[in-house]
Image 1 (cartoon, helix red, strand yellow):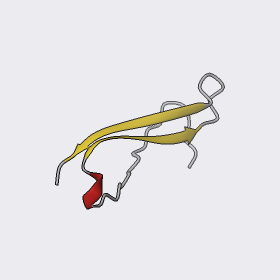
Image 2 (cartoon, one colour):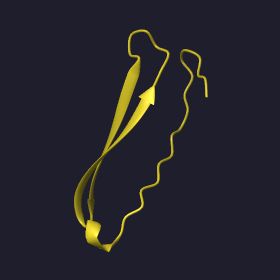
Image 3 (cartoon, rainbow, N blue to C red):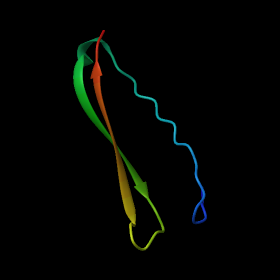
Image 4 (tube, helix red, strand yellow):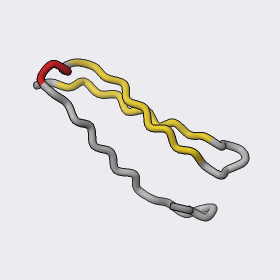
Amino acid sequence: MVLNPGQKTTIAMQFMMHGDMGGKHNFSVHLPTNDPNQADKTLTVLSNWVQ
């Protein structure tokens, strides 16, 4: 996907959890860009999964 300056988009993420994964988690999603001022962006998702 290519966005021009000023354009927006939505990013959807889905995390698969199982019974032994309860508790706090820190997920990162790496987004490479063509922005010379910020060539790479990392989105961090913090969660506390309760069964």
